[in-house]
Image (cartoon, rainbow, N blue to C red):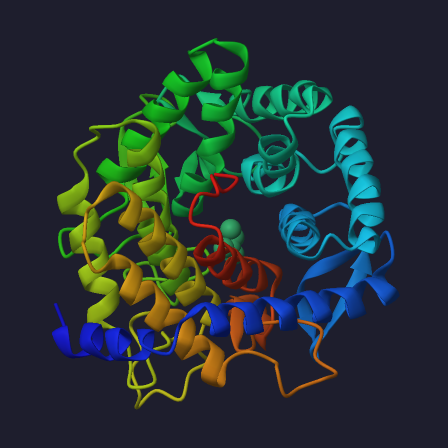
Length: 386
Ligand code: GLY
């Protein structure tokens, strides 16, 4: 492990106190308030173009992040302007289920955890239980008995799409929530089976990760890893590694005793060893400071939330300090505090480099996880939405 990087994060953490956190949160809420003046009931696109979000229907994998940010902002400010939009967002998420609108993929957890589950946990509003269960059922419909995993994309059973992806770790908490609400353990059992397939196949010998992993559609046997958004099949996509840094401890929190501490430590060590001088990773961990490639700030925001989960389950006693240092590294050079016209919070993210999508732009999950990390630190008892 590159202890120098760890020490640098820890030094940065000294700047993170309640005054810093409140300042960040006030700024975030002001920016969101300004954004909703223009967005009204429409949803922002997954990433910005020239630092502006495009306005869209609730039709992507990222819409839940928007509702989650509005909910945290509402809880923090009690400003009714947020509440009014949230009510419209809830209806939109219910309609999306009723119409099965753009839901033929596995990102149903990304959609419904930061939206309906987050609100449900804070309000205990029982009217949200039904849509949460419907969403979980749709996710479960993608479970492949042959191979014991949830197929990420495409037509079910298509051999060319017979794969899982590392991001899917974040879709599983919705299934655990469904088991909690219904008492029916089938959701949790399938979630755990899928988790085992991710964790046993997607982490390479050197603790780097594949973005996606294929299974044989005939036999269900693990077949091969491949990338989708990373630089190459053999490289390590930064955000994928970050999804594992958050996804593994989330699973441990829910399924106590999952014994994945060593795996988490290896995955985390690999990530830290690839961190460049300014403490924010490049979009693929194969790059270094000689590469002139863009950074992916969102990967660090996700990793910071992972460390705040790790703090809860005790994998590392210094996890909170490292998370704080990561946030401070982002706050100094990567937030849009001096860029009044930028609509996103976290600059210098990469959505999909090969498709030239959101390269060196803000994106909703970068904004969301930066805010979630600040909100977690301000509210240590908060359960989160995961
Ligand atoms: N889950 C898709 C992404 O991280 O870009």
